[in-house]
Length: 155
Image 1 (cartoon, rainbow, N blue to C red):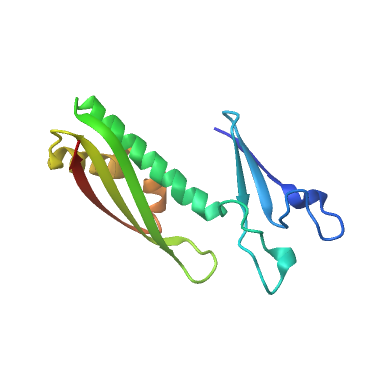
Image 2 (cartoon, rainbow, N blue to C red):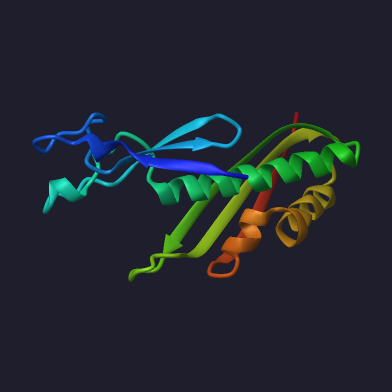
């Protein structure tokens, strides 16, 4: 797996950038997809901040973790021949106040929609993702207390 991240402000002239942000970055993944990231605006030092044009890098880490675990949960339920029709995970997090500002707490709330799926199957799928399959969750679990919850909607 590979990814190239380029600062789009590298062509800055006279305090302006091609992206409109002093701290905007473009990531190109090995699979050929692109993702824009931007820093938070910095009122005290605008040249050091972003323009809120895209997600922050750490937001993309959180989003990727949600995608990784949701993928696992859906796949595990499908492999168990459950009639899963939807899966959403809402992640909320806390970060350390000092550098490095790692995630210290992450709560993942899953909403799984399907027909005749036992709550125990969803609970098992989430546990398997977090204990064995989701590399992102397992990595973040080294610094963060990860808590999960879920609700099951018949439909």
